[in-house]
Length: 200
Image 1: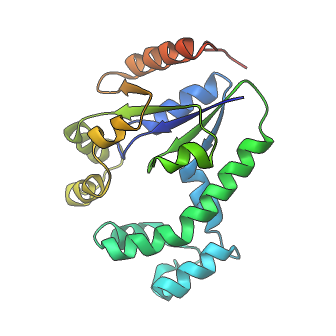
Image 2: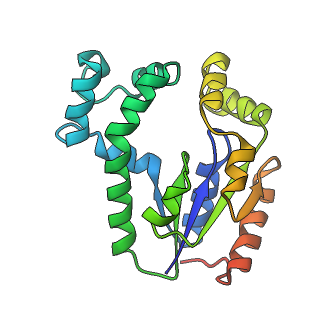
């Protein structure tokens, strides 16, 4: 099985890309989905987060208040490192297990915080970087997620630059254009991979 990472910062279009690939019948293991799973009440990461950040990190139902936690860690590098130390190992282990159980010719891994070590940890064959300008990302976050501009800028600034991400990628997929443009670019990447865009 070929394993391909989809890397991209916030607002780069990872959700649109993964939706298209899933619609074509490909397995996608999404780090954001896994991140929600590993912090569910009763899971070790949930307990560790409450220990690290206090009861204020919980919403009224006892679940992790993701919006509150995001607001804290995107403005405090020390808090962000604490969060990552708790969640990243558990996310990586869960994703690796999902890939080991997968069937088919290609599996995709959506990684917003792709690092060079992921290639070995997840046995990746290729890395595709979805790329947009910071201005485009900011506009999308404001219009599609109704995010406060200051919050959006802080999140974009907290991530690696396009240039740094590009250096780690095997293929850069420009996503400045329309949804149709993105779909064509993904079809081209699939064809170059030798698998083609299939359905079902």
